[in-house]
Length: 332
Image (cartoon, rainbow, N blue to C red; front, side, top):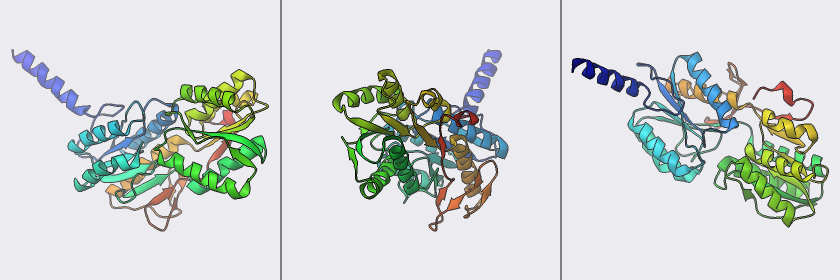
């Protein structure tokens, strides 16, 4: 009986050490615990972000829990955050699937003395202590449309595929791109409202096939969210339309490679998501120590950051364009 009791206690202690799950490391007593929550786990972009966040935790000697829903589900994010708040974490860094849906739970986190950051995608700015952005949203949206025009020309029909309709960062880039095109490229004709793909390559592939059928004069596709341009390029490749339809968008270079090689994807543009995960953890840890970021600050393994005059909007840096001749230089 005594052996059984000892065994039961050991199991309980081990379970407690791994209470967060979802890629979390064992909690180190006496050190801060920082949660990094993506929109969803299991896709290459957020896998790369996880690697950066976990490495930052190791470098800093702190507890990092990287966990999120398996689908882009705001309700599931809320449920998971409520559980994490009850367990007494020190900081929460979240990429919301729906910013408004997360506001109440993030307010509860702040009331509990937890530092709140958004990363990758903006949350309600009234509840975050820091907002960590990959790039300048306006410049990025305009850049994507410049790439589209380089691929298809300054006039003709095009479509927009996006991840989720509630994703603030995707909507912001698209809105800036559309406003820019209205004055810079008046010859462009958007054939339909932006098409959601649920952050899934297979859905983007099928929606692209539908667009090709519905709009036979289609000359361009903008894919926003990392699986989306890949799914679109897959459909264009399958239909043999690489010389007729120019696909551009936000995708990882390793995913883009097979489609950049034959031109079914003209160009993809992104930043290093591993660096974004790393930067988020570093800034959260600094905040817990009472240190706020400063404009031009040089972050180890990331580089110099830009901090807006509000003191809480942080920009990691400009994106990189991936084409056939350079994508193999990148390991993410």
